[in-house]
Image 1 (cartoon, one colour):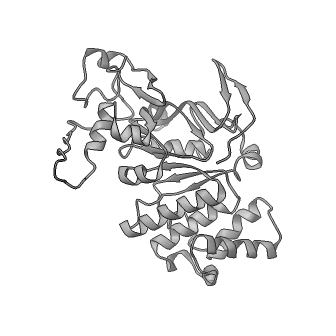
Image 2 (cartoon, one colour):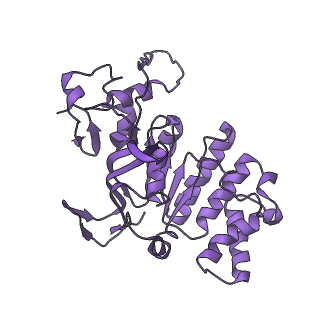
Image 3 (tube, helix red, strand yellow):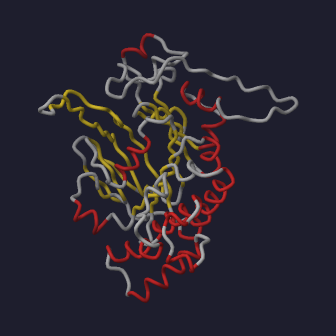
Length: 343
């Protein structure tokens, strides 16, 4: 797949970041939601949904983000497409910092290029609009094509995602879950985006339908040269579709690597515990996988532990983990980890 040929150097407050074939770069991203109490709604604390993560996404790849519910995956997605504004940090898209752009500028330069597939296809579709109106709306918002051309584009989109042209007069409640997700995917393609953020796009679907949607996403990626950020808690689906995978816990990125490296040689104790939960068939001569059971509950994101945020549940924690935040650094080429076990 093609790469971005130009090199753009962007100055930040602290350092200099060089962009080559990276379509997206997240630099120390934070999103803290204020906790307001009392009659006067004074801010008494913050929920640290995302607390300083960094990663890059290359043009044409599928980058996976995994982790338990509440770890901040969806918050990262909403910040990338700027449904939420980051509390701190930078989001570079094709070398341009979009983290603080006003809505008017976002619509001109970003909204068409970055689209999102939401977890609940029914909740993300307007129940009062027909399929035709839903797919035509992005064209109207961005003043794209004539009315006749829009109809032709919609028909082509429906064929691309495996839906019939006769469906255009139906409403969302008349479709199955898999069909609704195909509609949602078709809507993301209307503006011909380069980057699609898929937030748990198959978790609400039956297993057989999941496979169809995953195959569709792979076909569309090849056809339209798309880049995906694929967010999921299903490690088997992530291994199938993703090229690289980042593991999140309590708003922090714990490990990031090529999928084969991550699944075969996980470094972080949290990653090891997640992978140990994947069911697999027992074969002759193959040793059984050791199941790692984490003790305790996930700490509150409004009051995360000091030091390594995972130390309260980590079976390998030692004194340094309780007091010092581990640096997220490259342990092997392309394999990053935030853990004091790897100096």
